[in-house]
Structure formats: C-alpha cells, structure tokens
Amino acid sequence: MTISVRKIVRHREETLRENGQELPSTHVVAWVAAVIANPYGSGYVHDLVTTADEIGAEIGRLLGPACVELLDAPVEAFGKAALVGLGGEVEHGSALIHNLRFGNEFRTAAGGTELLPAAEKVGLTGSAIDVPLKHKLDAKTRSHHQTITLVIPGAPRPDEIVVACVAANAGRPLARLASFGAEVAR
Image (cartoon, rainbow, N blue to C red; front, side):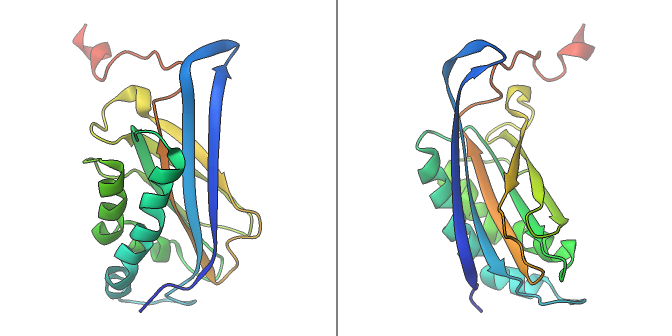
C-alpha cells in the first residue's frame, strides 16, 4: 500500500520580538503537513495496525526530514499531529502518528530521543489543531513546552487526514519558568 497525497503544505515563522521585548535570537517554528486520502476509508475498521505499519515509514520520510530542512536550524523541540476529516474517526489518525515507523523517521531527522508529543482529532474542513511541542532530548525541560496552531484552509476533506510534523529551534520566546520540580524542592 502507498499513500495518496493531495497536497503538501510547508509553514515557517520567525519571531523577533515578544511582549515588547527583543528576543536574544530569532525563535523559528516550522511545520510540514501532508493532506492524504484516509487509508481506512469511512466507517469502522478493526485492524488499523497493519495499514499503519505499511505506510508509517513512508509518511515519516515524507514529512520528518522536510520539516527539519524547512526549520533550517538545529531542532530543539518537536511534535506531531493528525487531523481526520469527518468521514473518518480519530483512531484513524492516531494509528498513523502513534506508530514508531512514522515517529522514528522524524525523531532521527531531528536528532531526538524523546517520544513525540501529539494532537489528534476529527474536524471540519479548515479546522485548526493545536500541536504540543517538547524538548527533543528531555521532555521535562519546561522552557520547551509550547503549542503551535496548525490550519490548512480546504483540508481535511471528509475522506482525508492531515498528518504533520512540527519543529522549533528553541523553547518558548522569553521562557523563564523554574526547572522541572523546583516548586516542590523548596
């Protein structure tokens, strides 16, 4: 089985100032998403794993390295998402992105070791999905917990799934929370 891609969307944003403060370095976020035909069709499918195993690496290779390349900087934080059209179910998207064949492609491209935080849901065409990001080497690094909103006008159609990889070159702009556990160590 191979994936049927309708479109690929690339997005890169650079933040130079936050809340009136100039940032010490430009905060860059990039995401690459593929709008694909839902490989499970509509309705209930009992075995989701076989298909996810067959196409997971293909989707990961399509998106992961492209996201890292678009970021054009060392990746520090990453995440993933699946937005399923109304003809499918959330489990269809979950099967694709919670598959190590998919995740390992992105993790390898990003130089990460942590599990990729994820968001998945069913939505109308043009729906937004908020994608959580965490540090690629230590998910407890609070400065890197951030959320990016992803929207593709015209997608997903009811018979499609949007699958995305997201990367950032740093933690949140102006992050200044104490390290993990500091509040209970006092």
